Amino acid sequence: MAESSEEYLANLTNDEGEVRELTEEDFKQFKPLSAFPNLQRRLTSLKRPEPAPTLTVTLPSDVITPFRAKGDGWELRVEAALRDWLRDHAA
Image (tube, rainbow, N blue to C red):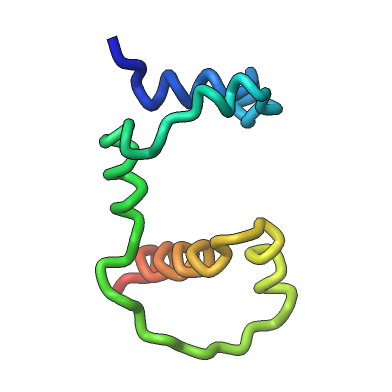
């Protein structure tokens, strides 16, 4: 029986859920994303359906630094925070 994407990924993580140090054997066992259609569908659905308009906003460093400190994807985290605010302050 084929291994599910969840089982496959679980084998690459430690007890804390972090990716463990990978071995040469791990690299030999890697499978392409196409081998996991459900995972591939979820990942590709994260793309924006259409390009968002570009907007320039000046924010103080004490506001933006915590978002950027978490690494790549900080713009999406800012977007999520703005969406949360909009939801909480809907008219």
